[in-house]
Image (cartoon, rainbow, N blue to C red; front, side, top):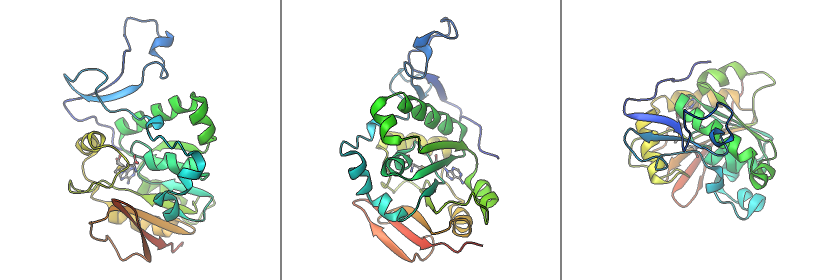
Length: 240
Ligand SMILES: C[S@@+](CC[C@H](N)C(=O)[O-])C[C@H]1O[C@@H](n2cnc3c(N)ncnc32)[C@H](O)[C@@H]1O
């Protein structure tokens, strides 16, 4: 299913410390040794953005994950689709909390960063244990993927949506530098209302939309959960 393939002009995606003159199977060019990084052309290697699941420290492990607002927003569910994967911050917390998570990403560069981050996490014993094989990432447009799931066994219990909104917002789990670059690479997600509509038809139980706490509602929610800088608007789904 379709996603957005282009890397905008002025950006490069490459492995930190990888060298083209090494043999193809040289371990030093492996994902573990050389994380994939997105950076502006001319920016020093190692200063770009990568998907680093270890950075979402979660020292309190499963108990800490389960206390987080995103988990309260998703609620009682087994399967969750994170329809806006980004760099997997929310998807990681959900998987650690025990949900079976499918994270969907339509921007190819962001999908590649996320896949690389997940692959490296799976080779880290602590992260792999926390994740328990419950997280996968798919390159697609969530509107198409969820539309194909409506009314089928593949429909998830809950769907999380965290679209990119215009600049004022400071709601993401991601640090500011990541947010600025993400915005430059993927732009604003102007079809968020349409995605919400498809999600409401697809989810078996509920849909949660993450917003800046000062943001206007996309549609009237059934209830909201307030975090420190974020709000989750929540709807009971209307499966068709
Ligand atoms: C604000 S970021 C999500 C951040 C993420 N929650 C995290 O914690 O890292 C939004 C991401 O959703 C993706 N996205 C937006 N609409 C999408 C759609 N319809 N299908 C798939 N991905 C989408 C964007 O490309 C972007 O990478």
